[in-house]
Length: 290
Image (cartoon, rainbow, N blue to C red; front, top):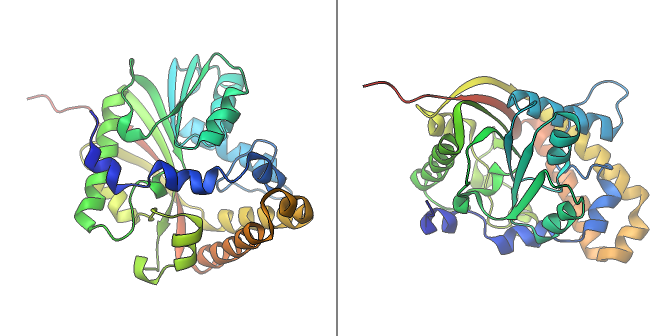
């Protein structure tokens, strides 16, 4: 099932590690206690941790994962969703995929036999057994490199959904969260973000996701929660400010200043609608009988 061409069109392991392997201790200074690094779902008077747990629960419920035997998390981060699945939702076995060595090390420190983490791209993944549900939060943004052709981009996305279809049991569901371009073109995007924060990564358009799922997955729900990302970024920025001296000691002034700038640019992008946050649930389409 491996496809070197597809792998080459997405962010490399080195590009992922450039960002996510900065320092586990650095990220812990400004993320919540679950180490969740994606937009939360906010309600009034929430703490960051509560809002993040609400987001994780939303994705788990969207994938219909509760009580299931096997669940896959594509781009599992520091493992908050994996832990939630086994500790609160009765899942027998969770598999997480990431290209970050630091995240693998962190998840292995859980010493949880129900969780298996793999330093592996989705393009390399060949499960021994099918999954009952798939979750992917904040990974889709890394599947395609900038400056590839629209047809190549669509090929990557469609290949991912074809693989996900093959991995899932009949009747399986997938929940997906990703940032998408809205009132913005890739050429007009921030060069700083593209070069200094997330190299080799490009956002999808919502239309590209919809096109790529045709006859593979049925999109059941879709919501745009860009203001949730504004609030999440504000919370991260405030926490980084509170712990700035310690952050500088860990990674240096240049890196801390870079993250502060990155938070500010992204807050503007979501506030203005240049970028959106898509939360999508989808059901596996079964092959038509001939």
